[in-house]
Length: 204
Image 1 (cartoon, rainbow, N blue to C red):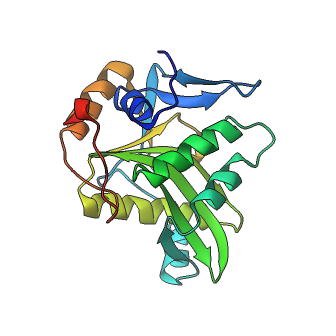
Image 2 (cartoon, one colour; image 1 turned 135 degrees about the horizontal axis):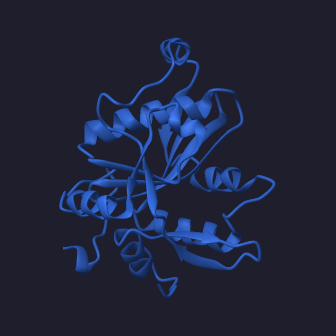
């Protein structure tokens, strides 16, 4: 799939099941996978009892887009990263248009952790996550799932499976099955937050 940087083309790419990544040279391109990792939005979602205690203790507060760029930069701060400066710029443009969101956990005035993602109708596509304080990103995951369920979202796409996501009950589906689920999610007319989302013509 040919890469174009305008917002409408980016959203169309994600709506077709692709996602953006930068290679080792920092060159952006569209990618897909034979198996897609999903976070369940039903009773298959799980997390440890120890995390439940932390949530009940209210060690962290939750916010949306309080520090969007801060979350982008923290997600990119790792030894090897696919989030290039160009991709951060794209995320920021999507954020300004009401497509990209940071779901954050805070400890006082300190950004503790967060999840970066893109919301299109009934699907939330998780791009990356980070933590600065232990358990902060785990709390963000639990609270994000609650938020998506309350909003009526039907698909939480985590893109690629890893051991951390498996602890929350994530599972893999084939590319064909993912496309079926994605199209059903795109039939929903939902918003992630109170920010109005602009829908490109081909999705209307």
